[in-house]
Amino acid sequence: MADDIEQRLASAAEALREYEMTTRRSAELRRRTEEMTAQLAALRARHAREREDVERLEGLSLTRVLVSLRGARGDTLARERAEAEAARYRVAEAEGRLEAIRREHSAAEARLRRLAGAPNTYAAVLDDKERYLADSGDPRRAPLLELAAERGRLTSETHEVTEAMQAAHTASRALSQVRDKLGNASGWSTYDTFLGGGAISSAIKHSRLDEAAQAAAYADRCLAVLRTELADVPGVTLTAPQLAVDGLTRFVDVWFDNIFTDLAVRDRIKQAEQNIARSMHLVRDVQARLEQRAAQVRARLATIDTERRELLTQQ
View 1 (cartoon, one colour):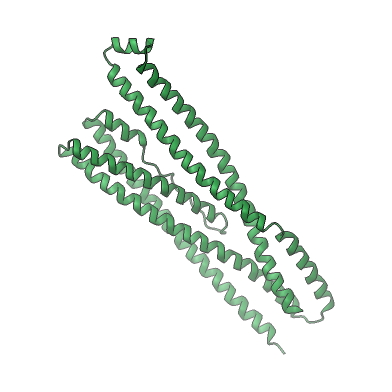
View 2 (cartoon, rainbow, N blue to C red):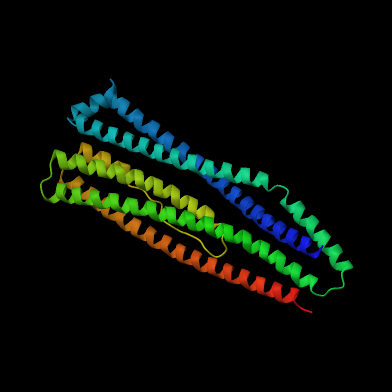
């Protein structure tokens, strides 16, 4: 009877902790979904305005006539197209982030539904524990059941730390990919800026920038997942700058290919490389703290096993 209650209490405590953590995670993901939805709406509105500017210059309008009279229609139209493309790029990025958050939220909600009975189960086991302790005269029963409850909570935390460590590993690999892509883009940007470059080097640089932007968007989503996982681990948080390779730079450089924008692109790449380096440092710090927390939990679980054996072998 004692072993049965002890095991049930440990399992119920584990499930209850998971239920509480998942409830908080779901609420946070709901908040982020609402926030990202609002940002996306603003970005779409901006894109629509930029497209209207392009259409006014492309069509027959007073704006087109006035710009043409100034002899600057070509440059102005190119700039407006670049800004419209940059706005569309930002919309696509935001849509990707929102979809990732929604997937996480759906998974958390499904997990929460599976754990819906955890609070009632835990309360029922506590009632059984209370009745058992009232009927039992053995002084060892109370500390054994307390150890069982703590073991259940720590077992749940072990799962959470493991998931966070996996997310940190994925984020670290994604950041390394961005760093490598930016390194390639930086090399071609230097050649294009200071060594003459040309159409071929410029095209290669743009291709590398596009690859870096895609890798950065993926790394940003990985960091978002890591932040969500860390919410379940006591004492470990992550504050990382949002990763992005500015899409506007890519299009400005295409339309206005001169030494000034080449230098601007090179400067943006350097800023992005510094951003990645800071993010990688933060993730490494998080990984170290997760390892430390995992070691603490393992040590406490080992102590609980020792204390339990000592109680059970007492004469």
